[in-house]
Image 1 (cartoon, rainbow, N blue to C red):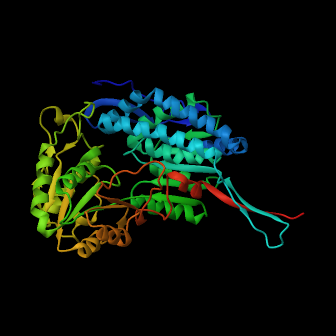
Image 2: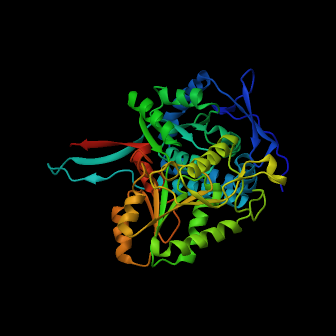
Length: 488
């Protein structure tokens, strides 16, 4: 078990060099599993530092974009191998910094390996099409070219996978990158950047800039030479990103919150549904944008399903996330911890009944960390705060309905539209659900959380900016189309 870590202090990488602390301020990062464990110190860069990073990325752009897809792919393959070789080291640091159970951390790092290899393959795939010309002699075709310098602003909940699923397509399509990680995952980002440096990417192709959103993030948004911005985070910050980018005609891509519902109909396999719902709600301490936060169940089976959910929640053992069998560890920070507990209290004040959990775990080994019991609440008004707002914690609410149409209407009644699931054996109900549900990711007899790397990912309504990440869909954001007509 990891009881100490090497403190990382170099957290910014610009123009092929690690930025020395110098007189720059720094911020200490303590682990959420034990707030006495110092994980690292992140440099708080200035606006001028970001400007230097953008200049470096712009300078590297012509050479990098002129490489063939096969040549760029070679760097991505090297990155995949380097990360795979250091999988355990990176996973352990990820767990120490943000509290994700080590088994899930290993899975996340492996996903990064898969993503780099997948996008390396894009270097040999089509980037255009030949079209028929009306004169019969002209050669009419399209091709795709990179956007240029792209800014990546990434969240703390998937500090390895999400940066890579943005970075890998950006790079393979010829862009250069300025990457700002969330402050709660800066130390993990630094280790990932170290592995990318060791993979041999040319100077200036990838920049890592650490610091606050108000300074570093804002400068990325405002810089005239940052052509595209890909952001994952809250809808409040996403709104700021869209306003800043659109004001200067930069291209932007947003992936934001979710209030994901799982509908359980009377004919469902309730044992399976309960297992899957608890996993989707409680894994990663509910800190996934695709986590299930609402169960909408037909009245005739509500009592039975509720009993199964409570039974499973009560069997979950809170534990140190560095233990191999950890199912539920701490939440990422004091701020997140306080916010989740406040949501639970608001729910109780609004009339909700706590069926399981509902409290912080503060005894023994948990006293120095941010642990919250797996929580289930019933009698929740569908229009209440608890049922409408993203909590981002191990909290599940239950609503009952009379029939499928009422369930779908209730699922659609929030401002988000990221993920949704249904449990039923009736194929007519399946297709009705698929056609009517307002969500970008739909699961049938499966959990809302998670999608394979080759599949497009994104939401509807305030969950997204109507674009998609991952899979072949990534080419739509990270490139622009040229139409070419050659007449003899």
